[in-house]
Length: 366
Ligand SMILES: *Cc1c(COP(=O)(O)O)cnc(C)c1O
Image 1 (cartoon, rainbow, N blue to C red):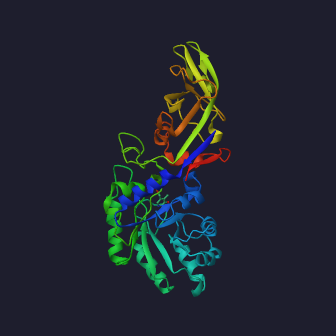
Image 2: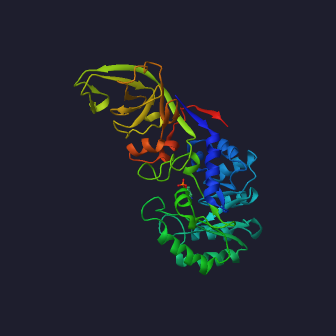
Image 3: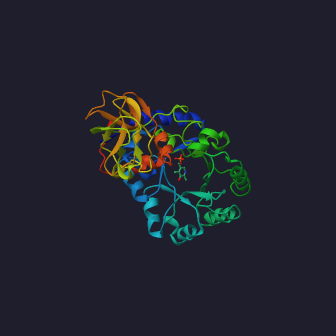
């Protein structure tokens, strides 16, 4: 089995991000090894198509610099200890400052060893990271005392992909911006907000932060919401394998661990060399979409460690060795990662990130 990567799709999706961003700049979010797609390859493929890269670890950011990345880099959680700060400055990495402990770490660094630019993160209701609205002004003044003047106000939306939307968070953000960050740039929109809420994109000095849309996943999941296809996003990753066995079930025969699938008619079953040890979600139940020999069908029974089963009753060409598409684009069309994820009770983000190291990654198109 293998994960085929089509980086021309990544570039297509980045062009879509550029359209949604209007005049605003955008960070390509490449955290978690570019959502499992490979951070170096993704960064290279996006070179010139985004305005910078956003990720978590300074080690990975420094590795990108060593690979020749000159564009701005944003560290989404900033630094974790004072010892990290000199390297940030040396490699021109912009940290997010989200709590008072980080302000004190900055204060402990010598004046010449402080970054010129930082993001200040406002907690606008997600209650994960960020300063409370009433503490943002003090944080900004503290940064000014420390000689740091290039400040961007940042927040992250908890509900941009739900019916609640961004209105409450935007009210808080606008209030804090007007009171404490007047005239400074902002960075607000993730993929969902960038697509759905134009008011979060900002102007030419502001920066959106799309992630999942770049990889061809919809932040809204599956129909009746806007699917990736509706949004004209193209899948970058295709997870594919082959049938390694076939079985014939008589009515009443059960299949796989726990016998959770029981045949009601005579059925042909294909056994696919792909299981949860490859990153396929174990919670994907009977009925999860899959394609065999280019024909769309469904999984049957429980996913096991190295194998899963699917219905090939009506696919005569599905013999041992037949190609299988778990998600992405196969011969007979697309199996949306979002649709597989929805059946498994999760989101495509987790599918992409979970593809195991044992699965070879093959760059199909750069
Ligand atoms: C992961 C992340 C993003 C990107 O989110 P998507 O939903 O993938 O677009 C943006 N901002 C922050 C702070 C993040 O952690």
